[in-house]
Length: 217
Ligand code: G3P
Image 1 (cartoon, rainbow, N blue to C red):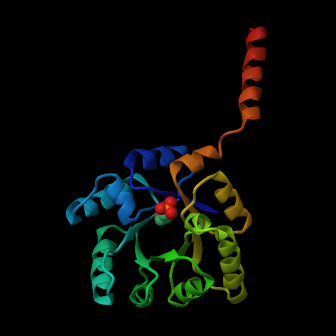
Image 2 (cartoon, protein in one colour):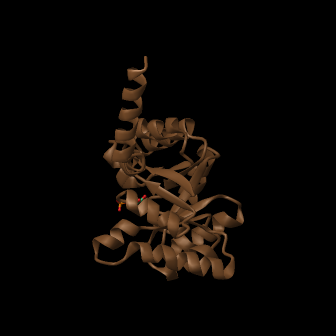
Image 3 (cartoon, helix red, strand yellow):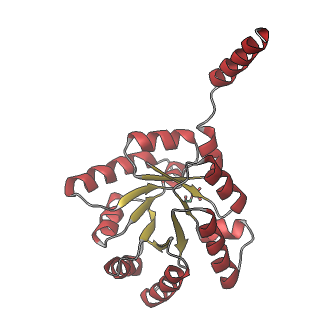
């Protein structure tokens, strides 16, 4: 399972990269705004800065919602850096744009996916990644993880190669459950990734080992 970090914060991206477990980055307009990155030029520069930190795929989202605009913006983003993946919304023109880019071997990530039907359309359009938002489904009393399982079953039934990128991860158990359900990728805030490290018995055990070592030295 690949680990992506879901942020535009360069320090957090560096921290995950330094841990040696990072396979890529996902961003969206809200995450950019959270870091105070506004204006087209600044946003493009920020994508380049992210690409210089990591070696894997970096999802960059288009703002346009019409086909022509999505193609124009997507091409500009793709030309920015070879690691850029074009992130497209799951709307009618987004599906068309996904097909357009997949025919040109440009990687895509279809985002804002909340149903198995949407995931089928993304795969049919040749998406590299499909991003089901599990936390936002949980927020409205719907089982987000169930969607991961449904998409996995459907993709396996037909050998779809689109990778399931579980997004809107809120805590460590989401990551562990996504691994059980065979998501191809999780994208997560740094806090949930670092949360996987923690176990009180590890801390207690280490303390005891070090104390015992000191007794004999
Ligand atoms: O990358 C988009 C997705 O992960 C959003 O997460 O927490 O805003 O629902 P959240």
